[in-house]
Length: 246
Ligand SMILES: Nc1ncnc2c1ncn2[C@@H]1O[C@H](COP(=O)(O)OP(=O)(O)OP(=O)(O)O)[C@@H](O)[C@H]1O
Figure (cartoon, rainbow, N blue to C red):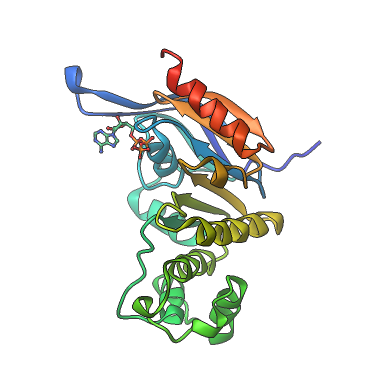
């Protein structure tokens, strides 16, 4: 039996915003375990709680109640300082907007998380990550000299340089055309095949079909899931979720 702790575990996580009559329950008692090395897509209608789930899981936001674990570390209850360190050392994040610093070259952007962690980046280490995402020949280019897909691959390299336990993506292909988006998804897929845990929020059934498992949220609760899904199946579940009265 596999005794390894899950890469990520949520235990009855609730996140509310606002007070009394104006309160919004973005997550409503979500429990979820994500195995190490798996690729999970989180889907659901707009406002269903996907980003809140990702943020609470990645330690960017704190649940109102419930517990979140990264490996065997409970992140809920950590001080801000410990949480910042944990995010820096154990988590990678890519967003829809690539968020590369415009004044820095691709390799300087990728080296940044190592510098923030107080390490002196080795050029070979940075170059190796850039090679891994297919950006080896663009190391000296600044973001404005890169295409959208290249910038997102640069952002991926920056997220991976610290060898995070979990790579989170919030709509990582949302700003890319479908061909470029597919290249980024294939990269994520190959990273997961090599053992990297990946958790990605997406609206796109084709993007979600690259995952091993799709978890569907509606009104802050997990309503459904699919394993090894095809895009058509995912789209059908999304349509069903949208029409099921909650
Ligand atoms: N900081 C906040 N303050 C108040 N309400 C919030 C806040 N963040 C999220 N919400 C509310 O929580 C609910 C879930 O939001 P969330 O952004 O997690 O949904 P989502 O599924 O990611 O939506 P989308 O697909 O549109 O990005 C929504 O009703 C949203 O308005």
